[in-house]
Image 1 (cartoon, rainbow, N blue to C red):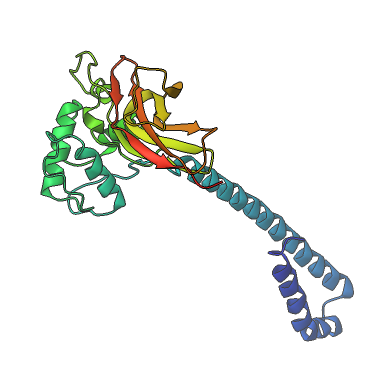
Image 2: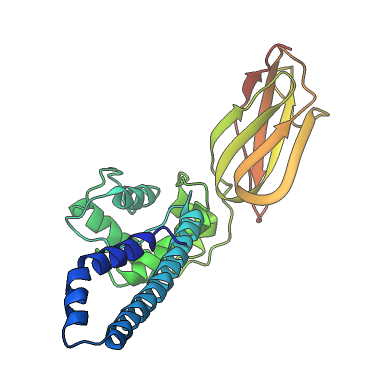
Length: 281
């Protein structure tokens, strides 16, 4: 029996006990035993109906809870504007909005990430709306929200981070109205790290502001020469969040590496050399 139903049945029993004197009086008075039985059966039937209705409500709540959990899973790790934003408001979503605006100096030259929607943010929104061919109202309504979320999905994906230069990235530029120039700009690489390093392995991770492939050259000599037979691992997947695993490394050794990413238009960005040291065996 469902835990929520036990208190109801307990209450019903208590009510029956408390009403016992009245029942006795009714039997000794004008009410017959048959009328008493009929009355009790009616009350029991009513309780059963209430229990069925509560079971339906409980099941409905379970379904809603399940839907909420699924929704949380979907949005976890993503950046998305989910409410209308206007002058005087504050919050983390406004910080995300300001971070997006700040990726284009023409749109938001002040680049202040305050979480408060003031005059500077209003001006920046108007400039972005002009680039998106939307009415320049200076606030984020349904139409502007939809376009901004489209840009965030394309430029940030599920990384939870807004890449530098997102609004000026070639892939994003193509989504702006009146833009038909060819893509001649290489991806912008950021957040390069060597992580989860052991005695024999490590993971090289980085972000790009547009989808691109992944390459890592590595060795124990510096500088790393990417034009020779230096060891190289690559992935042809065009992604924003890059991760390449290096294995069969030597313990207690310093390795030097260079990463590169090429977008769909064959524009290549190569980062400066970095290093990591494997752990002791």
